[in-house]
Image 1 (cartoon, rainbow, N blue to C red):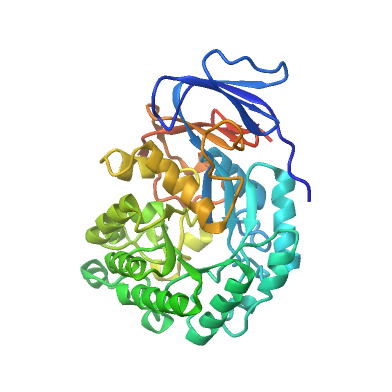
Image 2 (tube, one colour):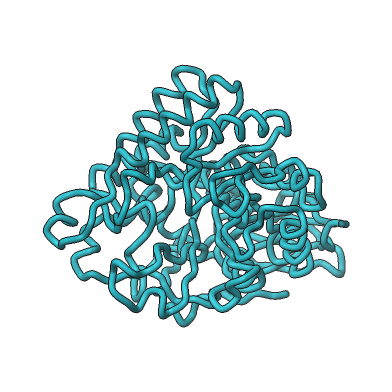
Length: 436
């Protein structure tokens, strides 16, 4: 399938990576054509006034749930793409736990085509590792990788590939295809009935605990399997201090392992459970303050590679119920950048180049995207995000683009605003509105 239409846009008075004096950036035919002062634009170019704002490469999310096919009552590729564009994203990876499961090329190719037709962000389908996410038989990864979608990442996210022999075979198969296996690290025998982090808060509230060891035991197992297979593995939504230490050890051994952290695990901890509000139920669960602090430092140091939203829309009835019965997950696409600013930039753990690294460059590198996460330089793709760091906004679920309303940040003030998103020179979102 051919690439979406490319466009031309002149962005004036912006500071790439928040550095230096403001410049103008001209994108023509989908690529950056000129960077400088008083740049002249073609007559048909759209004009965006930056007013001294920060220009970053478009964000890439390795972990998004768009729910289509099957749960279009909670999200669609169109509404999820709109949320992504408004959040500054130019590419997202749509997880396979749809209904039916994205375990064959018919479904993955359809997701790809739908995303291309909508044209707000590049929607890359994630293929299932096992048929039906059942953990019994490997899915046809080769056919999905060879399809129109060119699937490059596979995951049973929501479920762990807990059988070590099956995971070993998946890694070996992935090596031959040059694709990535992303693991939901959860030893299921340790989390039977678990709904909250195993610790003093859960014990006091009478909530069944989800121990750190359930995550960490799979992280170290898969690191060793990747070592022996001579391939790479990616850890979804790292959430514990122990996982950070295991990732650091694996890197020291030369093991090819990468990892992501969610915005909510950077900002929130299990003290949020005191209200029993199911909006705070996620998988893996919100942990304790030392875990949050370790995750922030690991993201700063590069032990954790990138931020991924785990954007997980749910219908109202799936959250407005008893905590134990609620579905885990929360919205994340439109609030990710402000949370990274609050948890990482404001304390000095990342500068704006660091934000570009963890939200754009590293995720693109992990999955081998060559047209995303690129430097802001002449000749590079015009996938860009404009950020006003001085204009705050208040989260209201009804004002978000998602069909669902399960945000834990209701009425919270966010410290920065995405003012425009550009995909290959086409402005997809501007001033809080999607444009396609």
